[in-house]
Image (cartoon, rainbow over all chains, first blue to last red; front, side):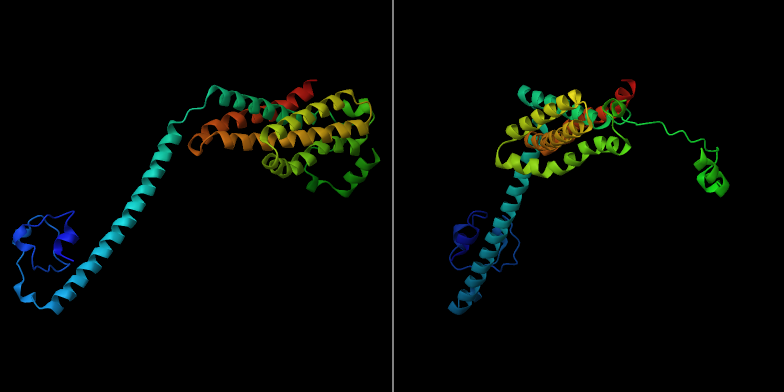
Length: 148
Length: 123
């Protein structure tokens, strides 16, 4: 795994540093790659292998983070698009007619639930109670009203 | 006075009012289930038909049993209509539009509830 393979899509490197370089994952991702020091001390194969493993691991993390990020952005965008579509949606003439029909039916049902209430009373209860609350009535008052 | 016209006592007059509300509430979950099984249109039309038949039966009733039967049939139809109104409304309108259009249906229902006693008292 060369450095080009990892950062190829972001940072095209100059040809002269592509042969033996190992960059630590902590290096900032800038386009000014000519400032990076070519690390000749890491020509040892074991060190190179360790460094390449680190790069591969870093690449996997970058890819995983990018995938998660893209999925989140995609989901968010879909939600926003759906909201925009909902906000700009307008009912057709047939749908408005359906709503009018449902409104008329709801009106008739609600009317029928209450129209019978004042038309039902059997008789008027004529009790001549004094203009006081029930709590203030005495037992004599109750007995006298029962007798009427 | 309706109760006097059909010879109902106070308990029977009470049940004339309640005979509508009881099936009105009970039938709503059933109507929703039936609308999933069959179709929205079939259940709504059945409810409207029952409501109309119950109204006609109440209008021609001469005694308490026929009036109670008519009110119960009306309640079945009314409950179906109320439930299916909400179900069909939810089917048609997306979430962002429901608040605005729900007001139209709820407004007419509220007007019906308000002017019902006035018409009943006047007639």
